[in-house]
Image (cartoon, rainbow, N blue to C red):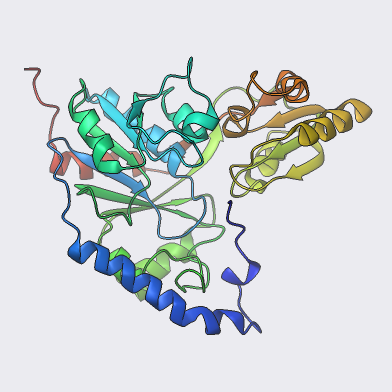
Length: 345
C-alpha cells in the first residue's frame, strides 16, 4: 500500500488530529530508538555509505545514490548498491539483471540503480551485505535504511526535499518524521537539501538545531539536451512522491504541458490507466512524457494497452547536480574516512 501524505503533515494549523496522534508518534519513535539500542549490528568489511532521509516519502535519495556511485567510480572505487527493492516481490538477496528482472520482481529503483553500478536487492539487509562481500566490490551504497539498525553505516548522508522540509516536525503517524529529530540528527554525517529555496532549512538546521556537519544542496537537472521538449504540446504523467517535479521541469525546458496527470508514488499502472492516457494523448495530439522511474514499471509482459502506453511514452531523464562546491565537500568527507580504494588482492 502506497502512503499518501496528509496535508496536515505540512501545515497542521486548525487541525486536532496531529495532537491526538502525537502519543502514537512518540511510541513509534521510542521503538526505533530501542531497536538501535538492542540490535546487534553487522560489521561489513567494506565501507558502507547510507543515503537516507528523516521523513516518510520521497526526497530524491535514488538520484543522489547514482551521483555518489559515479563520483566513487571516478575515484577508482567499485561500488555496489544495496536496496530492499520496495514493492518488488523478490526477497533476495539477488543481483539485479535488467534483461531478466522487471519492476514487479525487484521494484523500480533498483532498475535505475543498476544502470550505474551493480545492484543487490535483499529484503534482509544483512543477507544483501553478505552477498556484496562475496563479489568484486569494495564500496557499498545503501539506498535507504537510515533507520534500520541491522547493518552498521560508516557514513550516513540525509536527503531533505526543500519543498516539504521536515513537515510539522512530528513523528509518524502524527507527522512525517521516521524517528525523533534529535536522535536522527545525531547520527547524520551530512545533509543534502534537494531543490531550490534551501536557505530556510539551512538556517533552521544550523541555528535552531545546531547541526555541525556539512549541509549541501543541489537539484535535479535534465541529463540530455531538452530541445525536443521545447514548444511541444505535452501530456505529462508521473507516479512519484512529487509529480510536480516532472511537470515543473518540463515547463522550465519550454514544453507546453497541456495535461498533468499525477498518480501515487510507485503506482503500478493498469490497462485502464493506459487506455485513459493514450486516448487523451491521441485526442489532442499530445506527446506522452513521464519519468524514467515510471517508465521502467511499464513492461512488454503486460497488457496490450500498457504496451501501447510504453511505445507512445518518452522519459524525461534527470540527474542530481550539486550546487557550488558540494561535490568536493562530500568527496572530502568520504575520503576522510576512506582515503583511497584498496589495492587488488
